[in-house]
Image 1 (cartoon, rainbow, N blue to C red):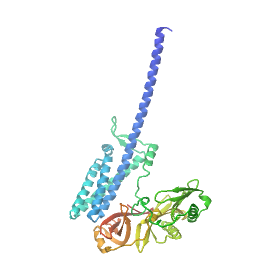
Image 2: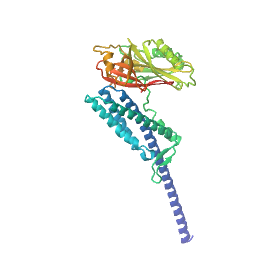
Image 3: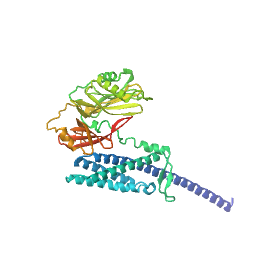
Image 4: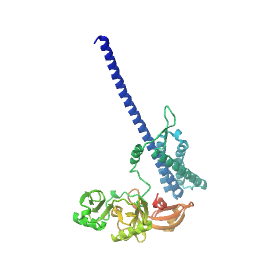
Length: 444
């Protein structure tokens, strides 16, 4: 082979190598571009969800402020609004505002927190809100409702992969169609986000406290705990062949089957069933919500828990979850919670959680210096129509509990509102709004 042929071969080989390298690089760049596009898509999907959550919180907090009757409660709600608005604004900056037409939303978010803070400062000075200012709050709430609806509608479109509009250097307002996988990954990342469903009128960090009900009770062995398990669930020993131990504030024996169908925890101290679950698919609803509550009440009676009152419930996937609170001398103790789940096809008890009750239940006394309901009702907002009241114990954010009057009220729009006034100090402790439909009775 002469020099010219060898040179030609080398040139061809070298050119082929260059083309191959360039092809690989091009593939890598395309892959990186796709990854970058997917990451951008994900970031916008997450931002839309975050913004929907924040606007929803703003909406409910503004409605509570309409019903607040004391400077302290207005101050608490104002601080919450400032936080929600700040979070929403920060999230909004991550979105293509011009393409999505949210410039008015940004303007609203800049105003709502500052207006609420101004009203709070006015009340702190001993002044009263005028009718005009209440109307302004009402207008803000109405707009927040519209904004929340708009954001959830946009969120639904993004979640189904229908459309997500983003700016692009080459094409403004380009549309990216989301695929089911990216949306599924996004949805799963939010599984642990808090929802507007509560075990009672207040959330309670039950596992961070020493269980009051277990104090002074003797420890039981594994066999005794197993017998308590099978008697409570109405099963055979062979149904729960496995056992493990739970530690923490409530050490327990945990009995379970081989395929995750049944599990039950029994406290080592006292031998109390703290929770159990019979996992099953329920395909129909053949009993009413009232019948489900009756089945749950009879189950608690069988356990000897006779002074319990059903408070809130929810039906999901044909299973009714009912929250019960302990009562004594017509005083309801929202800290002492028991949750019972009922199969709506036949009334079977498929779930039970008494950890809130075990942690908090103890003998209580009203104590001295309890103000009258007539005095306490003066702290309820004048825009609410008070229909009834009762005494109750509620948990505080600091882990304590306070005696309150629970005032059941109606707003001028028919909204059912619960206002909690401290029975010793007359401070407005909490406001909750009831939501009732065919799926249950919940609070927000």
